[in-house]
Length: 311
Ligand SMILES: Cc1cc2nc3c(=O)[nH]c(=O)nc-3n(C[C@H](O)[C@H](O)[C@H](O)COP(=O)(O)OP(=O)(O)OC[C@H]3O[C@@H](n4cnc5c(N)ncnc54)[C@H](O)[C@@H]3O)c2cc1C
Image: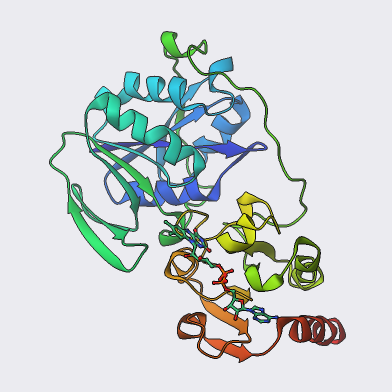
């Protein structure tokens, strides 16, 4: 059995979630990695522990991980593979359903455990139940939840690198990259952060949301938010945590003014320690929290910042 893992990358670094996908793939047999773009990333991929072969494709069409050319490339390589795997992040969620459709198989998204070569566990109902899924498809197309698997070591491997390209995919056809608008932030990436400081509708406004900044600075934390806070325009979309946002499992998750709807819990309930501050003692977030404080966040946050600054 051999698995092909799409190793998506940013700023020259293979994403942590893709490294977790390598760990999941290693449970299934031999692991090959697919890198599109920069040759230096292919070199880095060759050092990943457990990867025995790196397929490297260059071409303008692949530069921005557009689903159409990338899916075409993966399908052109698929005959050699039993499993086609990517991280359950924006790239994997965009590309792999298309791969599955082109191969006429059922994709299995958000895998959190590999039971056997054809049997996987994935959350359903916003993470309130775990489904064990057995696939009878000849090829299994999976996305992997990064928080459920350790990242593969970036050193220790010595894979061969082979250049591959799909003629059809090297030129963009019916999709093309226009522009990317990124928020310039020095904070850690939400999915990789050890600490996440998160705010909800209780933050009241975009301006008041910034009360969390000094706390996040002291803790070296990423900033997260509930969907209500995002919808209200307090913070940008990429901060949203939950069923329709990002999935995080940091060592410490601090929720301020978040009620704890199941759709929010679906994105953070696997955090190691959850701290909640909410002025409503009945807020459901307290059922998920390890430490809860019934208080006004606008009193608590400045006090926390003062106490942490002194310590
Ligand atoms: C299909 C679907 C998908 C969804 N996906 C997501 C998702 O991915 N992520 C997500 O977060 N939501 C998601 N939602 C929305 C979700 O159901 C909730 O509406 C949302 O999480 C509520 O956000 P909130 O807790 O910030 O707001 P509210 O539920 O309004 O809670 C605000 C909380 O702030 C507290 N508060 C107010 N003022 C203060 C204060 N001064 N100090 C302390 N506490 C205070 C209140 O007591 C209250 O508990 C989804 C919903 C649907 C239907």
